[in-house]
Image 1 (cartoon, one colour):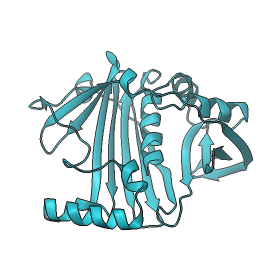
Image 2 (cartoon, one colour):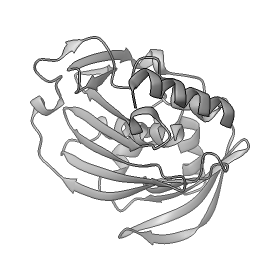
Image 3 (cartoon, one colour):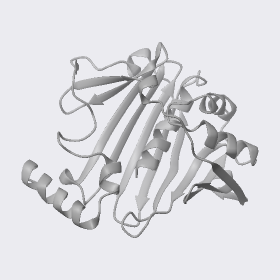
Image 4 (cartoon, helix red, strand yellow):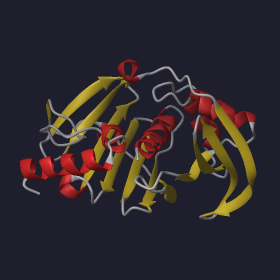
Length: 249
C-alpha cells in the first residue's frame, strides 16, 4: 500500500510546476485482499491538493484518510490537513527527501489501450520487487508534468522515471499494479477521470478556521502502513486487537 500512496503523491507533485490550466484527476484503488480506495487530485497554477481515502478492513477504524496541500508560492512545504480536527501540519520537502539507492530495470511489454488512453505497458523491477505500469502521453500537458516529475527528488522517484524514459516507457500513469505476497495481496491503481477545471487561488489555501498542530494521518499511537506491512501475522493480530480496545472499534 505504501507504494501506491507514494505513487499518488508523486503524480500530484509532478503536476504543480507545469499546470497553468487547472485539472482534476481521480484514481480508483482496488486490491485482492479487500482494500479499496480513491485518490482525488486538483492542480493548477496555484498549487495542488490531493485527497487520499482507503478502506482497509484490517485496520482500526476501517481505513485511513490523508489530505495534502502544496502551494506554488511556497513549494518547499507540504501541508497535511485534518478535516475532522480542523488542524494542519507542515513539513519541508527537504526533510522528506531520501537518497534513492535502488537499481531500476524497465522492460517494455507492449502497447495497449487502457480506459481510452493509448498506453505503453512496462514491467519495473527494483531489487526483489516488481510492478507493472501503463503510461500514456495522450494527455496534452504530459511534457510539462514529466519535466517537473523528473526533477522531483522528494520521493526518490527520479531514478525510476529516468529508467522508464530510457526504455521509452515514460508517461502519465493510467494504471499501476503492485504484486504483493499472500498477506499483502495485489493492489491496482487506475485513472478513472481526467478533466480540465478552473480554480481560484483560494482553492489551494489552508481552510479558514484550521489551526496548526496535529496531522491528517492516523489516530494517535497507530503505526505506519510500512510498520504494519512488515509485521508477522501474529504481531498484526495482536496490534489490531490493541487498537480496537484503545479506540473502541
